[in-house]
Length: 188
Image: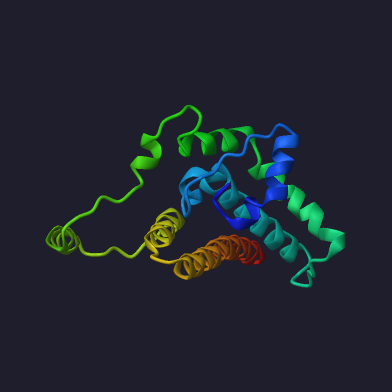
């Protein structure tokens, strides 16, 4: 857990002690690098949930209303895809926890550079517009990581979620277009 006040109340810590739970505190503003769920699990979970909602929306021809009757089945589809042992193990590895490898996280920490070094490195390469879903996700992660404040990170995360949704929607539309072209070709 990070050092959020809700995690460190007396009652909460007392519960830990009574149930022989050892709390593990992470430095503030570091869970995006150190907490396995944040590192590798939540992103695929969100992506698979969005895909399941999109698939259900297509099946209902856009008349889908998510409510009590269909939320949990959709969520379960996402859970089955995202909460696999390989994804969970890779999350612990990427966080540098199992096997213990702090270099996994150290490599993500930006090194201080002088303004001259920064200027030289940024002028030597012209910015590239991302074209693939992978490069778009890489860029959004970079924007989130480089955000200077919590509100900026929150907005960047929201933007990342929108981008993920648009990527899935784009893929679905491309698949629909492909099917429509095939149907038209067969009609001819």
